Length: 319
Image 1 (tube, rainbow, N blue to C red):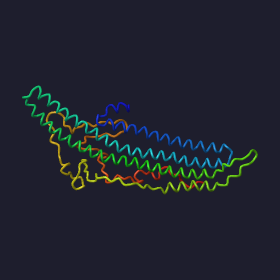
Image 2 (image 1 turned 135 degrees about the vertical axis):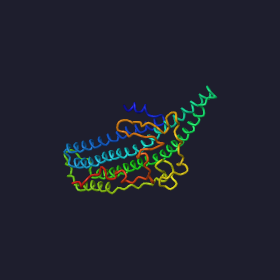
Image 3 (image 1 turned 90 degrees about the vertical axis):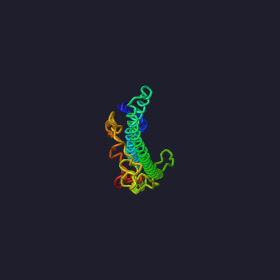
Image 4 (image 1 turned 120 degrees about the vertical axis):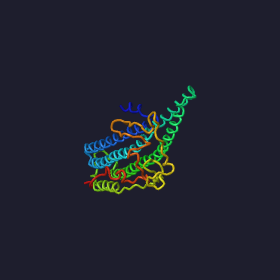
């Protein structure tokens, strides 16, 4: 079914459709990796208990807690990537809406050239030339809207992506450093046959390491270089506004002429269905969905934007 949707995509949006589809597979892989990591952490704890060695049992149990939290961070990362993928869809939908405008302009131009060749004196030439002027004007507006939304949303999407990547990496470092602290509590001095291992004396220290890891994750804050956006003056019609309140400027004020009497207006782009579970999109020349018309002033991502700094945290002190 997904392959069929890919075939039905307008030519202009096919490449980004593939990117979004591939990202969906990657997100699924991160979610799977997170579940596997949590499962492995549980298995490690069970194995340590089965060894009958109190030191190994205690350390492996604490390591399992840290590794389980690493798995939770994979799931948080996958959720943040879904947000980034959703922004890419806005570009794809805009591309899909522009394609009919391009096709309409090309069709009229082709009909005009054929008529000039076959019937150079035809009275229909004037009508086709007028239709071509209208189609070119509407396409000019659509192309400007496309480049505006593409640049803005590309910055916004990968701001989300890289902020999520930094969060995941920094929290993995926190957990890994505390994991290495746990390893330092395990005495690996060789013993000769018949000698007994001394009792494990670092139970409280191991518990404190987990509490330290929990506290460090809770206190984590992103330190990101802002990514400014100059799209603050873009109006609802995806054109620059002179006042910053949506009023069209000299560029955005260009209104397409009335549609021709014969033939469909290029602005009358049919609503397309992107497939099960995905949003519909509407003609870009007349009205974009509220999602596609979202305009942000600064795309720098704060941790509260995607809730990553709190999701997946351990709860309560470890006893």
